[in-house]
Image (tube, rainbow, N blue to C red):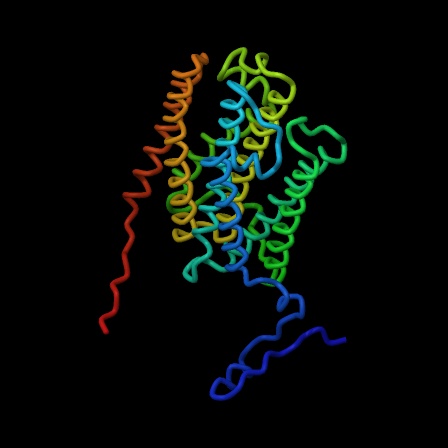
Amino acid sequence: ADTTIWSFTLAPHASRFLTSPPRTRFSTMALPVKSAVRVNQIVSMLFAIGLGFFPQPFLDGYKAIEFEGEAKVMVFFAFGLCGCQMLQSGLVSAQFRTEAASEKAAGVLTLFNALYWLFFAVSDGSMVVLGTLPPNFPKDSIAGNCFLFLIMASVNFNAWVGAGSPKPDFGKMKPGGPLATPLMVMMFNLLGFGVGCAFFTEQFVDQFNPGLLSKFNPGARGAIILMVGNAGKMMLFNILIACAVGAAEFQSADTNYRLLRAWVYGMFFYMGRFADEAVTAACTGWPSPMRVPAFLSCFATLFFAATMLGDYPIAIAKAKKA
């Protein structure tokens, strides 16, 4: 059976019908790819605001059992790490929602955004099913979270299919072309933190704050390990997404510029949180032997990337006179 439909338009635009390609019924049901990217930007930003700026109201919304004392401080720190990565995800989406951005790059972004949301729906949902959630987090609230993640995955996947299912060149996932070097430097810097947080969570936390986890009860310790681990997974996904979007338009100056701009903006925000950690350390007296090496690594990376971004020659279009 014929699975195509045609969109009829009234005069004086009737000629558009003769030149418009057929669209599948599925594509008419999906959001336009740039709209899906915009939805991802908004949802990611809302999570980033809640996690990074209003962690207690965020927890209250989930009806979580309240943390006390130093445990609350460390849980909020872990929330902030996740918030930074959600912010970076939103910033990347912000770069590709505009009309001037590559349609193919935006389409690939929706595919990998769908995988991102699906992964966390399955990851967090498995803890609900298996009963391994930290006791401070209610199952019903986390299950609701997973349902939202599945909706986001569906929105992004449908937009990707509706856009023609564009794919990156998987043989060119390593950034190339203009501004590829600062992009790779930023990815390499984040990779170490991502691997440590995601796969060696307890050891990584203990390396930065020796003996801290052992002070907390199982509920607080479980919440910290969960959130730091999720932050690490978000870091790795942000790297993968940037590589895939770059591979969609390999060696494209425009696409690389948009990616690097988002990463630099996100890193500036993280450095602000880094300064906030100094206040936390001073107030709590927590040992932080890795603070200086981490600062040097992150500051040097940001300084180099921001300098390269600022030095790149761009032309600003002049406004047309009426």
